[in-house]
Length: 260
Ligand code: NAD
Image (cartoon, rainbow, N blue to C red; front, top):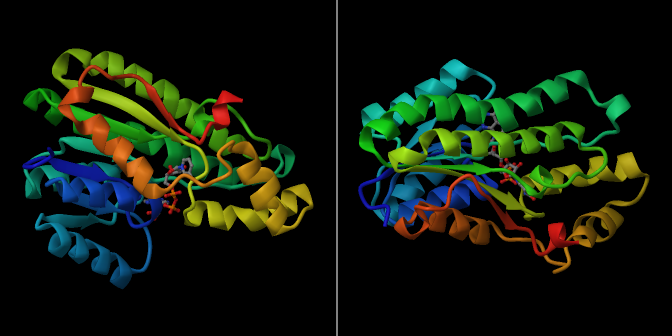
């Protein structure tokens, strides 16, 4: 169990990250949540974790575009809660457009948030993990770490990059009781997916209903969205002692998408 451990989950004010932070807290971890959004809504989620599970929950406002703020987030866990034992690099954004129209600032932001932020946070957390001879780094990658889809050049590039970062870190920390793995979900029903539907419709010249049926769920043989709770269960399992020999892997949870 995660009793007595401290977990930092980036991008945990919503969607998959929030489900992971809540699952870890339920298992006894003190947690640092992070992400953007309405301050009052974030405070409600933070205090709900404490009252629901009897653990400490702190909020770090670190913007994943800024390496100093990412380092401060890891420091916050270490100084206020005693450690950063589990790091989940989960914050991510999406943008959908043909490559020749893809806004340059969107490319830069996606590479920064979806890839470089995981490097900065891991870089900051690994010295403490090595000193304690235990650690778990989990990167929320995507089926798009393994296969591509049109109109997602930045996202697919960042997620393939995360696959490489995951494997490299796993090799470097293998003898320190630290594992580093990536989770590769297919389509999970979260605000990230909901918001891309109008963009997809525009890029493909089809209706929003057609995007859901013919683009998103067409890719997933189960014809169902993955749930955030299922992704959180997988993350939980990667933190367990039984998973100590699993490192440098891509854990696919995609309803069969990448089997096709
Ligand atoms: P979401 O939009 O619900 O959550 C994204 C989180 O990241 C939010 O908490 C948001 O505030 C945070 N965030 C965004 N920009 C940030 C910044 N600059 N600094 C700090 N935090 C920031 O989306 P989600 O679907 O839960 O996505 C979480 C992760 O899962 C992402 O890495 C995403 O690529 C990945 N993923 C999602 C799906 C899916 O279908 N939803 C599939 C595969 C992978």
